Amino acid sequence: MRVLQIHNFYQQAGGEDQCFAVNRAMLTRRGHEVVSFALHNDAVERIGALATAAKSFWNGDVYRDLRWLIRQTRPDVAHFENTFPLVSPAAYYAAHAEGVPVVQTLHNFRIACPSAILYRDGAVCEDCLGRRFALPGVRRGCYRDSRAGSAVVASVMAAHRAAGTWNRAVDAYIVLNGFALEKYVAAGLPADRLHVSPNFLPAKLDPGPGDGGFALFAGRLTPEKGVATLLEAWGRVTGGLRLKILGEGPEADRVRRAAAADPRIEWLGWRPQAEVLDLMGRATCLVLPSVWYEGFNRTIVEAFARATPVVASDLGSMRAIVAHGRTGLRFRPGDPDDLAAALDALAADPARRAALGAAARREFEDHYTEDANHDRLLAIYRAAGSRLQGRAAA
Image (cartoon, rainbow, N blue to C red; front, side):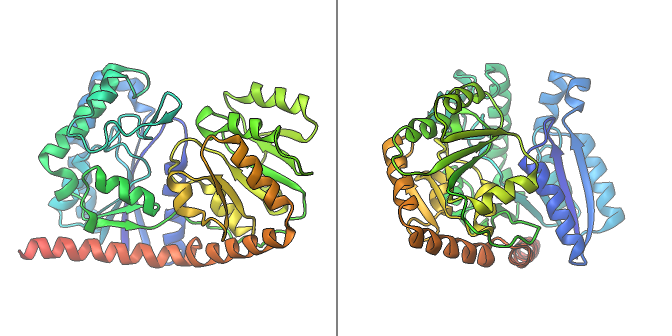
């Protein structure tokens, strides 16, 4: 199969950029031909805010260039990771004009929320979900604390909603978990075109021993990641469990003070991926106390691969991925007492920890390997092609 990958890179590399590279490598390894078309947000500073705003509605250069590329390469499918802001939805129409089915992976909630994460002021927010125009998000400046910027984002999404782009120009959407699927349906996307296909790990990882006697937090140290909840809970953990924290970010000073005051807490800062995975395999559990929905937290899959159970907030995608009592434990979001109780219960019962870890590993093997992802992805590509053919014949 010949796949055209289309992506708008961020100025600061993120998960979507990583998925673009990982999927390309996976498809190439499997014998598929991959053609790439990409723009980078570094160009935003060069072209200016007004031109960027205009291109986010419709980038005529992309429409022209992409049609030319498709004619030269004749791909079987066009797979989009991100179009905002420079690629724009014009790229969907370019693919359709050349008879190529369109698949879009939805990594965030940009279609329904100017900030893209359904979170503001320290709490989950769905005020714009399902609205034709995200007026609350504009009033609050949810996109980069800017009302003007938020107005542009909201207007782009509203204009393409009104034009029918989200319903007509995309043949299949990929969402990362069942929770996200529910939210996108509430946002107005067609349920029959939403396919659940989670991220995967390209590397083969063996189960870890889980004998380290510590819980592990691995992530950016930001308020929405629940750092405050985690540290408050640790003052209430009564067993001998220790805490290792990996990461940097705005909450680093809070973590530093907590580690200085409590010898059970160790802040390791940033560490290479190999060391993260080693700690993951030795940990009693991965702890994920986020107070926002999360998109798809890669560390959960890494923990599952290493046969490490996950203690996570009973919220959003974490609720969809972590099966309470089977692959980990869930606790009430933002509740340090409930988190401490879950951690104590797990540390006090090594047999239960081992059973949860074994189930987590099975979950990884069933759903998050490259083999499983490849098969799901090709099925989605075929579904997109069938839908486009059906429309053409109608």
